[in-house]
Image 1 (cartoon, rainbow, N blue to C red):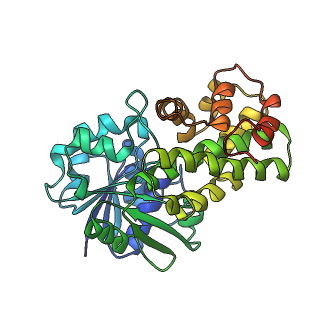
Image 2 (cartoon, one colour; image 1 turned 180 degrees about the vertical axis):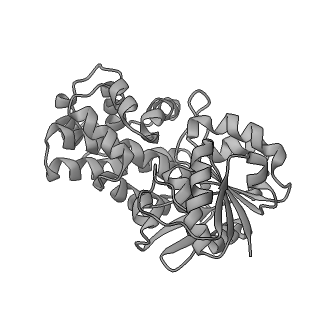
Length: 333
C-alpha cells in the first residue's frame, strides 16, 4: 500500500485525500488547526468543510507536519496559494528526498508571479521531475459524494505523472496524464478569474446569453495568455482548460463564482473576503495575472474589468455588457 501525505485539510485537500484513500493508499492529512485534525482522527468527518461526508478508515489526520509526511512517498499540497512559500519552507526538510511533490493548488504567487510548481522548485529545492500538478473540473463536494469525474496529472516526467495518476484513480475518479505543466497550471488559475466574472454577471442579474458570452470570450482570453507562456493549445480545450472552466463558472459550489456573485450584488471586496469561509483563489490571482499579461503584451479585457471591480474603480452594474461586447479584443468577432 502506498503511503501518501496531504498538506491542507480544507474542502479540496480533504476531498483529494479521500480520492487517494479510495484508490488504495494509506493517507495522512496535515491540518493546521488541531480541532480539525482531531475530528478527522476520531470520527472520520470534517464537518467544517465537507458536512455529511464519511471519510475512509485508511485516512487519518494530524496537526504535526513531521508526522504527516513521515514515510510518505507522495506529498500532495493543498494549502492556499499565497501561503505555499511559508508552508513549504517549513516542510521541505521533513519530506523524504525521493518523494514526489504534487500541487493541488490553483493560484499564482503575488509579488513573484510564480506558478505553484515554480514555488515548489524554487523554495523547496525539489527537482522538476519529482513535481506534478493536478487540475480539472473538480468541485470538491461533488467528488466527496463520489460523483464521477476526471482530472489531469501533469509533469515533465512521464513516470511521475503516471505514478500520481495511478494513486489518484478509483471507481469514481479518473486521472489522465500530460506533460504540459504550464498549460495545466494556468488553466486551473485562469478559469477562476472568468468564474468571478460570470458570478458578477449573475449577481447583477444578467441572463444566460451574457454568461455564455463571458465563458466563450473568456476561454479565448485565457488560451491566448497560456499560449504566450508556452502552453500547448490542446490543454486549454481539455479537462484542465475548458472542462474546469465550465464547472467553475456554472456551479454555485464554486467559491470564485460565489465571490463574483456577491460582488455583483453590491458587496465590497473586503466584505466578500470576510463573509466567505473558504479561499477564493481567483481574487488573489487577478493582480499577478494582469502583471504577467502586461509583460507578454496579452490583452485581457475580462480579467482587467474584474480587477477594476475589486479595486472599486468600476461599478459591477457597468461590467457584464462590456465583457460580452468589447470589440477591441483581438479575440472578438
